[in-house]
Length: 253
Length: 280
Image (spheres, helix red, strand yellow):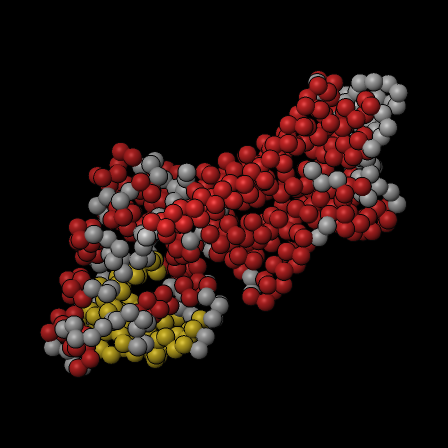
């Protein structure tokens, strides 16, 4: 097993009176893909979004327990969520490129919006990031075109390029392929496989085949509880819990 | 069977006819106003009108150049005061506001935009004209700004709320601080809608007369000092139209025509901005 990149210790998340994530402790190993599966509303997206403090924007959300990123407490006193988010990037369910920006500007958006752009570096960043998400050949002749002219699958790869451009350590993916067609989904899955060499990837998915295909580790959540987690192969072949088996064999959920 | 089809068709025609009549009832007065003003004002809109100040009583000719300059200056000042307050207030409401404070601010803005503009003029009179011991363009600008703020506030807030949350999240997830996200992503995305609101607010105050009666007062000469009374186009129309001289009436009609055309142009521009937003 690789080093532990992210460590959760009795993580609890409340929205007002709803207890969405209940006392979860688990580890996410470095340079690997961990899938979080479970039926709708089980708290998997909620848990994912707590890892880069996206809940800070929701006034009713309350996070307790510990989230450690390389032993740094993500929710520690005086920790700047902006700094955390630079280390923990995120890809969303629906592709969300910036609609007023070109393809080129979208890739370097993280620098541009922060006014940290060095012009001479921009071209290199754009080219290398687009190559890594296998989008370069498709768009290299129209980098100045609006990002919304791309197809959904291309937009999602652009969003991944935008995320890796700011050099995060961890990439969170919230059902990154659920809005895409099968071919685009396949491309995203291949991409995830390649990205794990450099990043720690945590992916929420509804699609159990996808979890089985792309992940090294799998965690099964149900009603806010962590039912079981471990190596993907083991979870999908010899799960310890009856609930896990019922879910992955499609008996409920 | 036949009877019911006939009845349905009859009802259909009746209702369509009523709606057409209602539409015409809205359009006819607008057309009448426009054509009447055109007829009465067109002959007096000439170069002098845009370059001369009013001639002393008894002399013919002259124009309303000072009124137009005054209107421009005061609308400019009012925008300088009103737009930042309105836009930043809207950002607070849409992006940061707690529910209770926001409700109170929204309610106040709605009441304020429903307040008769003469009351706004009286407030500015009490706040500025009395302590400064004199009518001034500054007081007029403040009165106009008070009318602009609620309009800009509410339209900007609505536009900011239309920006999908996924864009804010995309920016935040890249490690962009909230304030930069608000300015460079959220406000940027809503910009054309915000511009529409700003232009409509300007169009609204460009024609306001009542709040200026107690504040800017009006001026027969070139007034460029913001601490002194200043002419404004609507004020001049008002005072010239009630004067007993035929020549002044002509100028008032010309002023009305210019004002209507300017408002028409502002509304068209506002529509244009609104259109580019929705990508039509």
